[in-house]
Amino acid sequence: MKLVKLLANLGYGSRREVQGMIRDGKVTDDHGVVLGKHEFPGHERIRVRGRALDPAFPLTIVLNKPTGFTCSTDDPGDTIYDLLPVRFSLRKPGLNPVGRLDKETSGLLLLTDDGKLLHKVIHPKSECHKVYHAVLDRPLEGHEGALFSSGELVLKDETRPLLPAGFERLGEKEALVTLREGRYHQVRRMFAAAGNHVVELRRLSIGGFRLPEDLEEGEWRALTGDELERLFDESLSDASRAREDG
Ligand code: URA
Image (tube, rainbow, N blue to C red; front, side, top):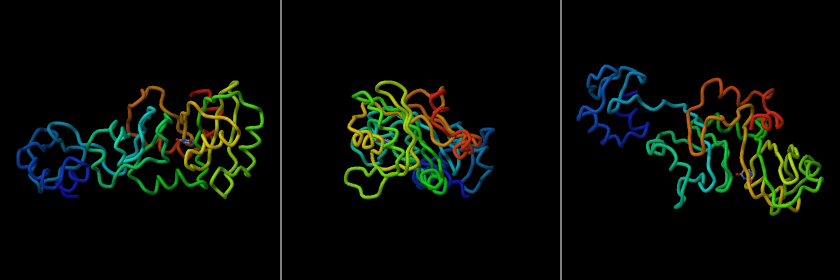
């Protein structure tokens, strides 16, 4: 790939702006030698203002999403893209959330520019389970597990029943819910169907990948190859593990 196109696709500026950066000597190799627009020493060796380039396509990142941020690009309020480098919202292909979290839900959010990966994670057939920790307004009544796992629960304003979901009571007003699909506000609406109300919701894991403990709220980092594989490792994917470590 040409240098100008690469830098523009990584969000360093429009093609014209990138050409200006190259003319101004802002783009060098790892020894500080200024690069011309026809030079390409390889992604790892290119520096912009002395700094290594952002990772190339395909990139998947994990964000510890705080509450109060939407997953939309065009929301006038705070969005998850405000928590990432400005360049990331200019990348081509763009970074998209892998299964959105609603504004008041926190925790594990993946973003990727890899359409195949995104599809594989969110498709119900992938068996890539998502585990949520819910804190409720009222005490659990005991019927929730049977209702959620029945495969017959139809949410308000829908006609198709939910796939069976996992449920684990953690306390009087606390539970883990494991989903194989991702419908709009699904966990909140499931508890509403059970006569309760979710006051706090946090995603703990996707497949066998758990929210890294060292990632503070609002922080992000790129996923490693091992972590990408863990997404699809069913042996690591269950609610009790998420509880032990979450
Ligand atoms: N269920 C919800 O209610 N909200 C989310 O963000 C995810 C699952």
